[in-house]
Length: 242
Image 1 (spheres, rainbow, N blue to C red):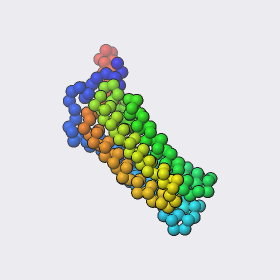
Image 2: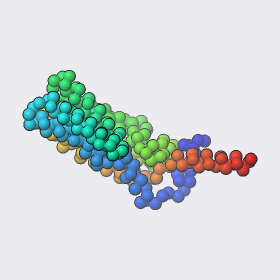
Image 3: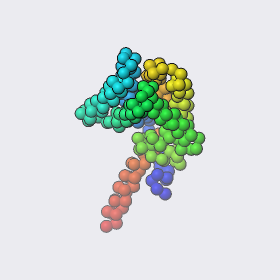
Image 4: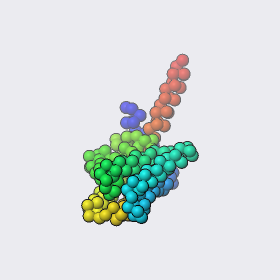
């Protein structure tokens, strides 16, 4: 058996205190989803776009302002040596929106790439849970240092990841079930302001469900610590043999 498959004391024996598990879950969620700051940073470019467009109906100025502030947010993080993965994803999202809107000449299309991506992500969360490979487990496994051990060695966590992935899928699909009709029927400003309004609440709801499910699940199995312990034991065995 590999260190990813064989049972460990943590899986079948003693578990860390519940407070430690909750703290670990909170830290992992903040790392994976960027926390409040990361979420706000993803909102600022879109907010600036719809604000400027509402005032002067200038697609080019709105697009340039949104892309510029997204780049500035990345530069600020780089200057402060903070993690930039969430800021970079925001830049790419804004850049795709700007490019698409410029290509079609329709300001409303600034939002379309993000809407398509969000719908696809929601479907991926939902379908991955149904086939037994919940996407949230794949995303958070490395953050929790458990990799895929939850699939075969920790059924309680697999169940929690499945529930959480279903929650994310349903939240995302419900959100875009509201937005796509607005894309066709509402004007750019109306769609933009509704998008801003729906940016944070669904994310908070999905993270809350994830917190609830994972905080009540068994603690993760630290496969990295297992491998390090196995390597140390092997080194000690070789040293003793020599």
